[in-house]
Image (cartoon, rainbow, N blue to C red; front, side, top):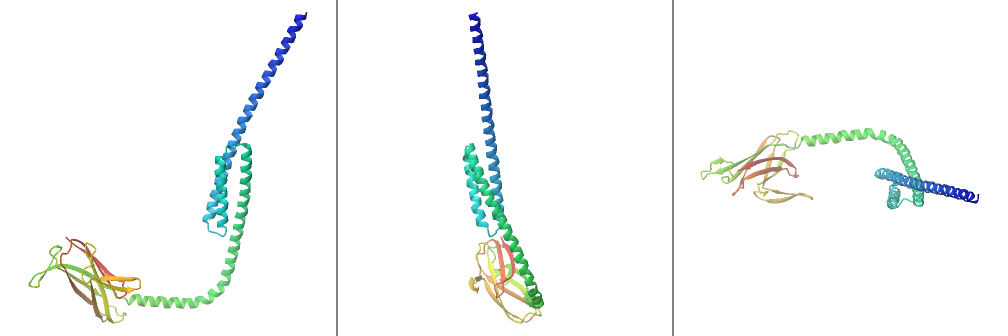
Length: 293
């Protein structure tokens, strides 16, 4: 009888111990599952917060690009957002750290919202002020229009006359020649044979231009970028100088005039040559090029 009681007690103890072990295992499993879920949630929160910060920083870039009175404030707030993003990305993402970063983010977001609202108000005030100024200017503009129209018409007329009175230089032509002892000149395209360049151009007829003396500066540049001829330099204005090959002066009487002049040289170089004609103001009025082989 006593043995039966001992066996029953032992069985009961085994059952209790088994239940305790099962309960402990279930508890440990639940704790492990809860911990994994917590880590997953914290990781997700960290990624979401980082994404929100990047979006706000991008919004600041747009606001800064739109030049406005609060640009310096936007830049300062953007810098704080960037510092918070760096700190967040370096953190381990535990619960305490995430709570701190979230609070800081919401603080910066509130400040951003306030700045955006202030910027919007400033823009609206500026639009209203501009509209008021426009209304005031309309009265002045209407009174000024007629006078401006006359000034514009007179200015256009003056420009038309000035443009029309400019002389056109046409048919700029250059021939390389070899001059024989008899004086006969033979055209050539060989640099080794040439000893003269014959340059000619026309000054076109213009009835509204003023008659009188005209001065033109001719510039010949050889294949090695050397200026041939006189190689004299003249100041055309405070910021413009010109080195020329020769000067030609023409008595212009509103009719077509042909200009001819020769440039004597030796050892002409093969290659491309450039010829430019300038008026007395230093304006290029004609140009051409030719080649010697």
